[in-house]
Structures are given as structure tokens and as C-alpha cells.
Image 1 (cartoon, rainbow, N blue to C red):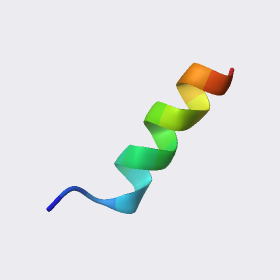
Image 2: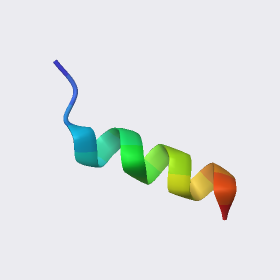
Image 3: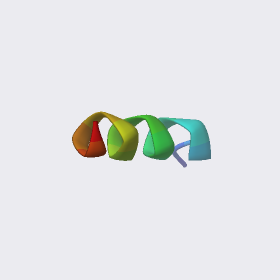
Length: 16
């Protein structure tokens, strides 16, 4: 299963 950090990174990249 994917790690939470990966999800946050993707979200942060989109938000940023």
C-alpha cells in the first residue's frame, strides 16, 4: 500500500 508521505507529496505538488 502507498505511504502517506507519497499522498501528501502529490497533494502538495498540486496545491503548490
